[in-house]
Each structure stands twice: as C-alpha cells, then as structure tokens.
Image (cartoon, rainbow, N blue to C red):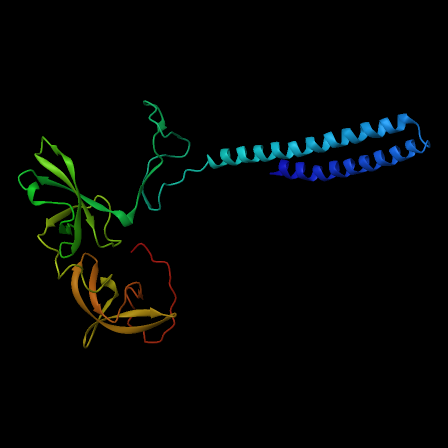
Amino acid sequence: EAGEAAARAALGQYAADARLAELTLRRERTLVGKGLAPQQSLDQARASAEAALAALANARDQIAVAVAQRQAAQVNYDYTFVRAPFAGVITDKAAQVGEIVSPLSAGGGFTRTGVATIVDMNSLEVDVDVNESYIHRVHPGQPAEAVLDAYPDWRIPARVIAIVPTADKAKATVKVRVALLQKSPRILPNMGVRVNFLERAATSNAAPKGVLIPAAALIDVAAGQAAWRVRDGRVERVPVRVLASLGDLRRVTGALLAGEQVVIKPSAHLRAGMAVRVAATRGD
C-alpha cells in the first residue's frame, strides 16, 4: 500500500515536468520561427518534451505495477487466516501452536488435516439406525419426536429428512436422518437420543412449558416458592411454581420470562427494590 501511494505521488511530479516541457517546446518553436533562437534549441526542447512524456507514461505503468503488487500481497495476507465455511461453535480444536496444517492428507508426520471441528447449532439433526424390518414404515417428511437421554421428560418435535439408500449388513439397519424442529441451547452434539416415528404430528406436549432456572435461585415463601428477579439493577420477588426437576435446574412457570436474570443463593436480608450488581461467580 505504501508503494502504491508513493507511485501515485510521483505521478504528479512527472505530470508537472511534462507540462513544463510542452510549454518550453511551444516557446522554442515560436522563437525559432521568428529567427530569434537556433534550431538546436528547438531540437533540445522537443527531445525534453518527448522524454517527459515517456517518464509520465512510465509513472502510470508503475502505478499499475504497484496496484498489482498490493493485490498480490493482499491475497498472500488473506492466506494467513483460516475462515470457517459457516457460522457456528467450535467443539474441538485439533491443531496446536507450532503445528503444520494442510487441507490434504500428508500421509503421516506432524501435518494436521484440520484446525478445528465446527458445528452449526441451528442445523443439528439426528442419525437413527432403523431395523430393516421396520424401514418400510418410515418415509421422508414423516413426523417424529426425539427424547434426549439427558431430558427424558422433554419431547422434541422432529421430522424425517431422508432415508440413506444403503444398509448396514453387520447390524441389519438402515440409517435415517431426522431434523429437530425445535432449537435449544440444551441440545448438544453427540448427545444420546431416542426417536419415535409418528403416524401424524403430535398436537400436545411438543415442547416443555416454563422457564429453566438454577435450583439455588428458589426460595420458600408462605404461598409456595419464589425467586428474586433482577431488573434495571434492582431486585423484585416473583412467585413461581416448579413444574419439573432437570439436574441442578428447575423448570418453573409464573412471572419469570426466558432470558431474565435471577439471584442465586439469595441472602435472607434481601428486600424488594434493593440495588444489586452482577458479580463474578466463584467455583463453589
């Protein structure tokens, strides 16, 4: 870029020299025509003008060369970045600092064929091995529901994408691709899942109701249970009702909305309207 800028700056100087040489040539031509200057002066002025024009043309060529060099440098600079083909989340970083990476297999050695594994969390799907005896009952577009081993009470609506046109001879199964119709940060790659194929789409219990909050955010009150919600830097107590337990989380219903902040392990001295601030949590 600096070379291109210098070439463009030099162009102005060569253009000024060419204009001066052209004016000198006109003046010498007039003087020689009137017999006030020798022919040699005209010849010198003509040579100087031609040289100035040649230098100006060369300066323009140098700008083109500088632009091409900048573009080549930009390409080489872009090669120093590894860009993901799509937006997603890195789930595994294979390459370490100092290792050599290549898009092709190097046949051993210390060359990695990949930098990281990236997952598009919005396009997760399930690979199901269906027994050959039942594959005739499955068809593309068929409704289904998926149940994660981690959340056995949560039935996720799904749909058959395609039936892979090949069979596993050893297991006597056919692979079926199933799309999850409900997205959630709780659905992670490589989770265990069970898929139920339906004759028609389920009309109820398709998705769990309520909001997930940490169990440590719940407090006992006279009317049942509640949680301290943080809004605009102040706390307010809202009643909730626990629907289900999912490990350290509780699915609740009430005034809480998804995405709102709650106080974990609230102090007994907490009062409505108190100002609070978010602090870094400790390991305990």
